[in-house]
Image 1 (cartoon, chains in turn blue, green):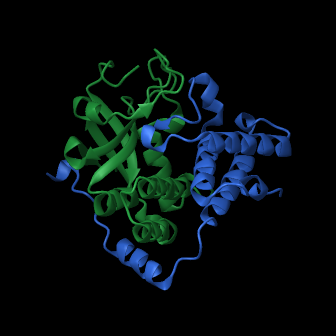
Image 2 (cartoon, rainbow over the protein chains, first blue to last red):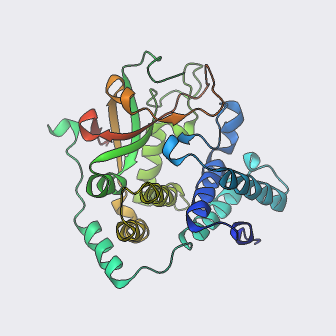
Length: 122
Length: 165
């Protein structure tokens, strides 16, 4: 499988993460963007993507569609899942390995999570 | 169309228990969510103006199926893990969390077991949400077909949480 790593080489982790996030949104909802006049980069002001993030995201989409010789909007489930998994794997690998302390903190968080009181409980 | 221009009294959003707990512990109990006035029951209706993948009910059911194992190839929880990391990146860049806290949230997003990502349905008063409406409408559409709204820094007091089933 061709990989998207090379297209991210000029971005810092933060921008690469953003580009992969918008790519994952497009992969998930590609059939609906045109029909519902959605914009791939719709976001809150504080996280609105800069130009380099936008151009890399579009390049990633183009790369995937050229690789598959099919618009993402026409992907079957297996092709979507394969690319979605690849994008998540690359994005997850952007960070250094978690330290022992971070692993312990994350484990403690998971063990002490609370569910909010729900409407029919009150 | 702005959130203040629509007539629906209630907005809906689905988040995961992990995201809820991160918001509560690290972001001062303030929540960022995509929401819509359509709960999600009739995709064929001309009045239903969000795609199925944005329907809070559809998202809720999809996450539930991934957790109970009936959807072996689901991607929704993986996408939620990515969204949590994107959110932490934004909060770090805004100076709202430290680098150490950011690293902790990244570890949580990767290591928290799938069954902890229980879906939560948020029921939000539209009037309460208006001050927190933050979506950038890049096309400046007067009447977008998809009625989806971003609210940021929404306090817990502005919404209720429901679990289905």
